[in-house]
Image: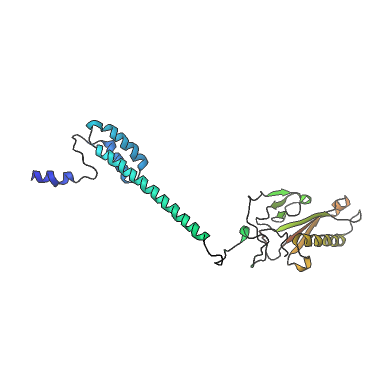
Length: 259
């Protein structure tokens, strides 16, 4: 009965390596083995090394657990690297496969800032921004008389000195096509005269900037100029703007689009 127990009884049913040495098993080695089983290699490895030191020359039982902890931890590390290597390989395969698509295959969907310069959206007819080659410029606010052709504005300004200017590749509402000056008498000639003079100059600038005559375009014009007091003080600034009446938000510039 005693021989059966010694040969194959519960005493030999132990998880981990056996150890014939006498005395209590080294707790550090046991702990290292436990951490290695759950994949905590960063903890198991130093504990395993420490366990080897503590059990050297038969100083204590459990050296086998320390050795096993190092082996299991090494296996975890190899498996982890293999997993990452496999993931990277699959990613490269997907990239190569995408690059090898036939030229006559499905065309990519293009919208917003990734569109070709001067392209027109079929849904809204708004210009679409070119692929950005540099970061968008930061929004800023300037006085309306400092606006220049090519600048894009977001919303209606809060005041004449707080005109919100953004990169034309970002969402905006209006685009400046020219800043020029009006001519006329020294005294305010009246709204009708100012409107007619501004309309003439803005239409000419429109054709040059957009690339098509105003009457042949679906776009609309707007302009800002000095009020009566400014005019009587000698100010004659005219800023002409273009916008798309079919959409409140634009992405991309109208310059040269012939729309």
